[in-house]
Amino acid sequence: MQRLFLFQPSTWLLAVIVAAIGTLCSFLYRVAHLLFYHPLRSYPGPKLWAISRVPWHYYNIRGDLARKILDLHETYGPTVRIAPDELSYTSSQAWRKIYGQSKPEFMKCTDGRGIAPVIKQAHLRGIIAAESEKHRRLRRAIAPAFSDRALSEQEAYLQEHSDNLVNHLRKACNEGAVDIVKWLSLATFDIMSDLAFGKPEGCLDNADQPWLSVMGARAKTIRWHQLTIYYGLDGLATRFAPKSFTKSRQDHMRLTAAKVQQRIKLNVERKDFMSYILQNTAEPLSNAELTIMASAFIVAGSGTSARALSATVYFLCANSDVLFKVTSQIRSAFDDQKAITIRSTARLPYLQACIDEAMRLHPPNPSTIPRWVPDHGEEIDGKWVPGGIAVGCHQLASGHAEWNFERPKEYIPERWLDNNLKTEFAGDDKSSVQPFSFGPRSCIGRSLAYAEMRLILAKLLFVFDLQMDEPELNWTERQKNYLTWEQIPLMIRLDPR
Image (cartoon, rainbow, N blue to C red; front, side):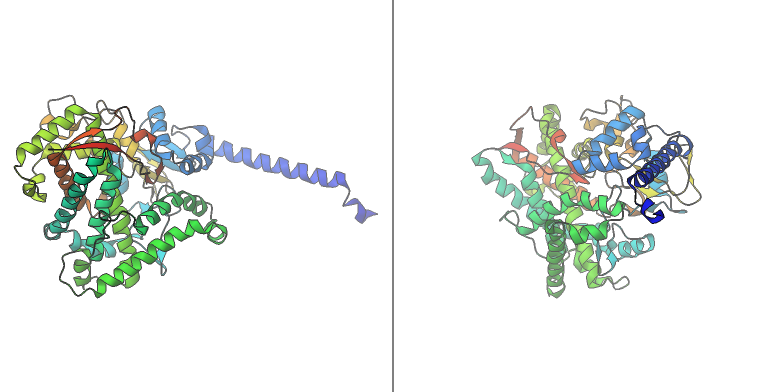
């Protein structure tokens, strides 16, 4: 009878009640600790975000995280607690501290928060997610490919594909408004594939390329990888996730590996990325490392430039006075399209200012690249932060912050000019905006990206009069964010001169 008593309903009910009370007490204790006793308790931010990372993942999966954190900064100020163990900053001082300090270094977070999940090939990490020493070795290996000398020798490729873009647009504009996002993406992909693989993909000549659809599908799966990696479920996710979740990445790496091998076997004298990397015998890379590196070139190189160029075209068309000014300056500077070069466009500060202002308002990578505070803690923006806390500067919020910029919501390229010292923009903290990141892990292709963008934009404005097909369209607000902005159409009317 005593054994039967153990299985009576009242006993089970009591056990369930006790377990529920214990769970509730444990939850309330955790909430109380996070709100009232945690080292980050004094930092402003919504209480729900302070006790759980679920809100972060919710907005991330929806594609609204970048704008939501911008809203939080506009509500709570320059520093916001966006998770139980994470702080978001917006100051230039925080940029220098978090990303520029080398001893001790703020190590890059690779647990799925705010960055692309770690991509591994043959048990190797690519340059974006590599540990510090490995990152330094990889950066040394590819540095010759991004030198000033290399950029000068690579200009022929940029000229060829930017001219090809203009020629295709001359034909396409006869049929009405063109999707400038599509055309800029095709052009930048041709440039990067030519530099990375020794042969362009021919996207401008044939837009129906499997690689482009693979990259688009891959971008939207990243948010799910972030979720599973953060909660330690990546193994289960890989096993049970729909094939489409893993197929896009596998297809991308397969295509990249094949292209790399073709380039290695190419017995032609070229001054592309691979020629410099393969000749750098002091820092040789394995085939697997070359594949991962080429993947980074293609994904980061083409997508970032295309998004920045698209945003610049949008803001120019939405601000007719700025469009008129920069167009007039370009057409006054050149008598012929052939005179538009990397060197000559570098002497057009207002053109550069238009690009910088677009990236301030709509950075290609609008979110945070978080880092771990070193073990013994560090002072950031005048306040001590304990070790083990994730910290980072939010790109979109930094560029829109009223404490960083005068009239922050307006597109005003003049704020970037050297002669603005006596204007209302003299106090703008332009160093609070770092679209290519900052410090030893900043984008090594910054000079190439700027040269490419100036060249393409100068040719577009020299050859065409631009006008938005739907002037009332708020193009930037319609885009979702999956680490980078979702690429949606931007219809522009082009009128050849």
